[in-house]
Length: 240
Length: 228
Image (cartoon, rainbow over all chains, first blue to last red; front, side, top):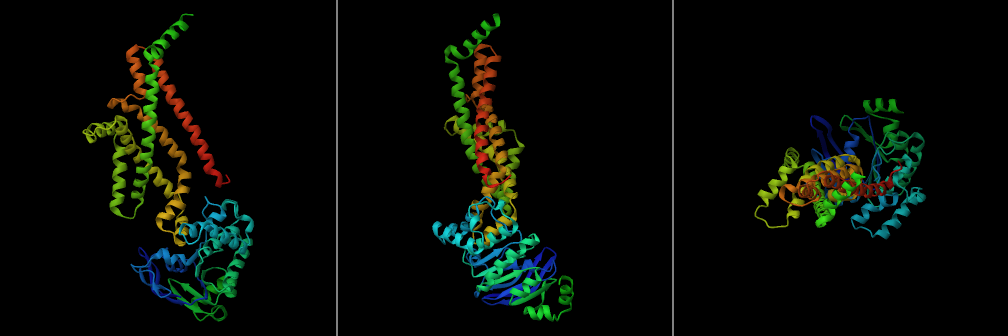
């Protein structure tokens, strides 16, 4: 479903991604772990071209998405993204946050989008918050709305960029539960996370990134239980 | 009670005789007309120039920079006279329309900087959230960035409107009878300075006070999404 070939990214002199290649199949839940500055967020952001790759190719469903002919807006419609800092639209109510994209892009009528929004809010456990503004929500609630907003576009792939890193500890659980639920529904997901327990429990596959490359990859049992790479062992010994 | 009689007689000479108050009324109309259309034009130009200044394309950025540079670097009365006597010299439009255009161009230079600051004040994450949902950059600008930016810059924008209204008091230079010119005219006709000039000041003050009250109401309704 997603095929990445020799992805490189430079910010000026800073060589952040030094050739990442990876294949992600449909229905897979892939957790990307690694120390800060290892390039894992950049890798994720290159997948929907919020960052432009300096070199390399990215295919989604066999279609090259970082070529000159790619229609990135159409491709992004099937790749939902959830950010560390939620990025809800503060001037819109929760419901309007969710319906904005499908209505603006004429994918749904206003009525359909609103029904979908209410359904999604129920799914993330926030039915009673449809008409409030984001400012009155807690961090965990904001992130659940952000997930609902991404799901409103009926994406085939969901990208999570450290979805719980900005949350108070007691709110991490409610967000992880929603993501877990989503994983069980068969959604293809790539999750950049520092929650090792969560990665172990939910992911089919774990990628350990360090210094701009994927150092190790495997099932959670392999990576967490019996890491082969010295860097992986060192990292896990610090965080587990 | 000499001064009361004196006041009455001066008031009569300044405003009642020969229906001189009508000069001020008509002047008010001219000021309002010019300010209103200059305001609309200024917002339009200001927004476009702000987009140029924020563009990724170098030539567009250069246009934005040069425009604001020239507008801010020259007096508005000079700009008005150049536009009136040079640019529109051979065009026979109503004087007030040409003045409105001149002030619109002038105001656009200042408004563009206000818009630019407003757009820059919105977190990059907002754009990323919009784009990640598949919205185009134009849709993201209109639906997500501008509504938030407008709310932030509204007080500054109001300030610019007020400055603009008062700035139009120089249209007398090209022979247009606005409030200021009307007051001045009455002063020359009657040799009384106090009455017409104070009347001029009061009219401007009331006009701007009314505008401030209305804009204050608008701002309040814009703030309903924040809990501050």
